[in-house]
Image 1 (cartoon, rainbow, N blue to C red):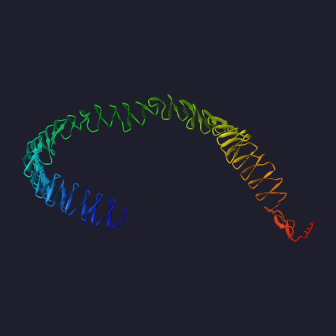
Image 2: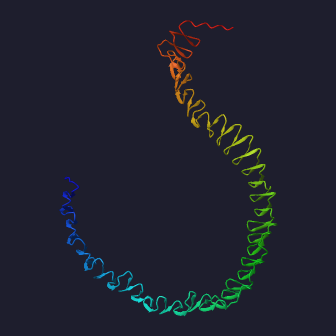
Image 3: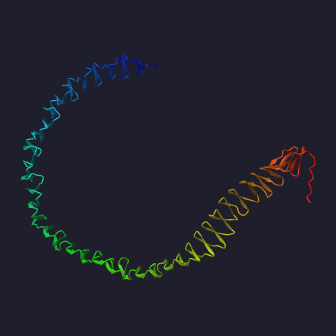
Length: 546
């Protein structure tokens, strides 16, 4: 409920306090200047004290907490989160001791010499990785020794490698299955327990051989000539023989191909499903196990036939009839004078089509369902044939042109029906068509906008239907009785008491009259032959024209 000046004061709970002399800690006001802080609900001078675990401890600047104690981090270190040990900012913890990180290293809780960037740990010992390395838990000089099997230190420096329980100089020796062999260049390889130079030698099983004089076929070593090649584990001369099925050698050199277990000369033979067949030129193909010349023959299933005298039907049946013949069921026909209609051969060639099981000439005839008709005199409506002089088609509905007509896709009877908006027929004795929509109301009805009305009892005035008899007429939107009323512009009036002059009603009780559609005062003027004349004198007589 109190106010305060926020430049020098503040609020602590419900108390106002001076911020230059006091401090608010946990809702409690305590003495404290600008160098004070809070430790729980207590204020303390952080230049002389430190807050550790909610308790104020002695030691201000350069002090930190170590558990529930304080220490000067310039002269001591905190180890295991609670133990204060001698050694300042350059010291690290190693078990229960501290060490200078610039000249020592901690290896598994043991302080070891060497604190530079180049020192690492090897078990409990330290080493300088620029000239030393770690083998298991042993430190060794890698310029004079080598670590083998991750635990055995053997003589030989950086150019040596391990081979079983020995080391070897890798630039003049090679290790082959634990045996040190001569040859340490890039071109040396192992063949079993022996080494070889792969530029001139090769390995066959476990035997080293000269590649220029011998060949290894399937693990067996053979003397090779200039034209020797392998076929399985056999050697053959590829200029005189051919290798088939990776192990069978047959007579025939270049130009011979394999056909299962045999070889054939590809320029006069071919292989058709494992059978060697005669082959005359590039025009030969296979048909099952036989070959054929595609310039004069064809393949029907697995049968070879002469396509100049026969035809292949149903992909397997060879029938008589050559290049101009086609198939029709189990028969052939000459397509230039016959046609196939549902498996039946019918007369007619290129200009003929089928109509059911019959053929027709499409230049003069047409098909309706299954009936052939003359296109100049008849037409088809759906599947119905009709004479165009007497009938016509409306949608798919046939109608007599003498008695009926078409409305959209619907035929209707003339005289009894009419077409509404070109899409729907209606009975004129019971309905009317108003603005494209069929409405109830027959022959005595007319349209008033979109509504039908009976003309004997109603009338239409500018789109509005009014109840009225035959002597009623329209005046604008209103209807009036023409026997006693008149229409003046768009207003009705009583003809016995009012006068209409030029589309305007004359005021009642005045001396005004009408002359040629113009209103005038009959006291001061006179109407002569449809013209108003000043004065009340008689109208001049009109000369009689002989």
